[in-house]
Amino acid sequence: SFLLQPCYGSVCMLWVAKGIEQNFRTEIVEMVSMYPKDRVIVHDTAVLGRPNVSQMSVDAAKKWGTQVVIVTSNPEGSRDVVNACKGAGIPAFGPIWDS
Image: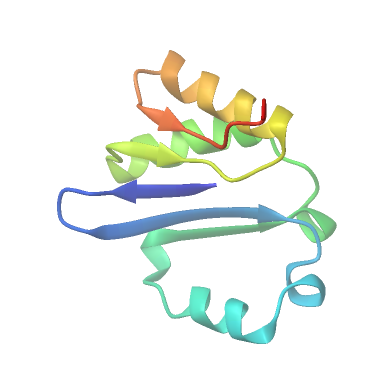
């Protein structure tokens, strides 16, 4: 899940994935680690277990004062996060899986 604040162009990121160190290129992990620590949440499900991503997204969006949430996930995950954010009054968008 990626959380964006288009007003001042800063990006906040919530990254939930399995085996981040093992499954993603070193360059991607290093790039993410360059973001300010207060603007990034990285949750490795192989280490920390599966969180409630929908609630985690809403909580992070509120914490950061996010204006819009952009979700990149599988169909079910994207739908769940988008619906949770919209239910909390946070505009959210994800991929369209009906094509």
